Structure formats: C-alpha cells, structure tokens
Amino acid sequence: MSHWIGTTSPADAGMTDFKECLKQLRDGHPDDALLAARRALGVAPKNPFYLSYTGLLAALAERRYGDAESLCQEALGMRHNHAQLYLNLAEVYQQGGRTQDAIEVLEKGLISAGRDFRIRRALERIGTRRDPVFSFLHRSHPLNRVAGRLRHRLNGPAKAAA
Image (cartoon, rainbow, N blue to C red):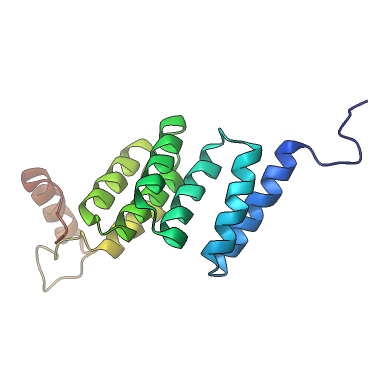
C-alpha cells in the first residue's frame, strides 16, 4: 500500500501548479503564472518545462532577462528536442530586444526539434521571410518555391532587421 493514498504525490502537486501556470499565462496574468511556475519548480526542480516557463515568466512579469535566459538555457540543456523550450527562450530574447538571438534559437529549434509548425510560425512573425523570387506569382507557386530554395542555398537564411 502506498503512503500517498489520500494525498497528492509531489509529481501531481507540481503538475497541478504547472497547469495553473499555463492557465494564468493564457489568461494574460504573467505575475500569477510566475507564482504557480515557481511552486511547480519547487516540487520538481529538474523538470525542463517548469524551468523554461519560470524563465519565460521571469522575463514577462519581472523583466529579469538574464535569469530568464539562464533558466531557459538550462531547460534546453536537459531536453534539446522539444520545440516549446526553444519558443520560450526565443520569446525571452525578443522581450529583451535581442531579435537576432531569437531567430538563431528558433533556427536551431527547427534542426533539433524537427520542422515544428510553431517554430516556423514564430520565425514568420519575426519577419525573416524574404519576398518571393517572382513577385507576380503567389509565394506557394512551384516556381517561387524552387527558386526560393535555390536562393536560400546560394545566399543562406534571411536575416531580420535588428
């Protein structure tokens, strides 16, 4: 018989706080989300998601960009193949005015976490896409797609205006 009967396990307690963190963040309350993230992190200090969200929220709620970056980097060191961890670090960089660093992190995320649509969408929002090669054709036209890939191979990735 488990000694956890009738109570919640520490893992469950951390998850409850983490769910509350995500809810508060989604509802636009970064200060309350940060409190919940810190409670979750206190229960499970080596959980990369708790670390990453605590970092993101330290940037959003308290403008503590150095601490935020450290927490997000630590999380990525633990689990380098999850898109959300790259997205959180990129958001920390953007909040701190480091657009080029955000782009570089997202590009690494595309490689490490696979071509996740959320990372591609984040890169598009930053504005790293070049104009279509043939402006009179739609971006998705096969000629633009082939010519764009060739241009990318020759010139490398587009750089955002920082």
